[in-house]
Length: 122
Image 1: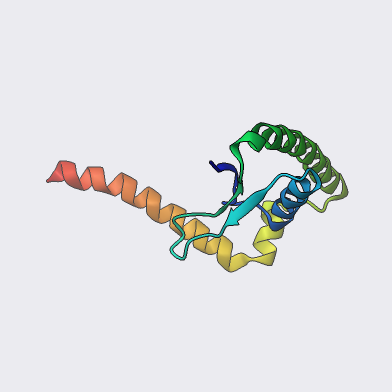
Image 2: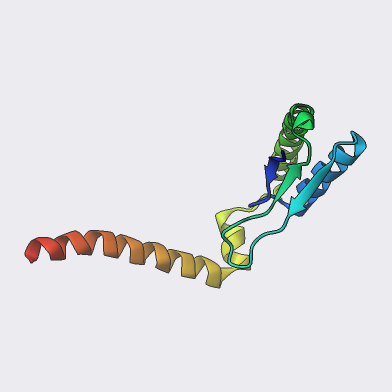
């Protein structure tokens, strides 16, 4: 019976490619499911044979630990070099997105504070 190794929701394409390559290198049979049309399912990478799952999980855990350290080092280097995104760089590059986000936050705050008040006034 197949077992899910990696849910592809919010997984960057380069990471999914690296996982596929890792499984191919170790001759672990797998298949993929694609995201659904309505966004309910994200798709995934599945191990075809349940007997291969412990080895695949071990490889995946080692890969994720290695990737975590590599990405942390890249983020730290970007911060040191001033390339890491900050609020000001995002505001300068995407002012409409920042404005829309702030308006959304303000609307949520207004609703959460106004509704109880209106209910109590009844």
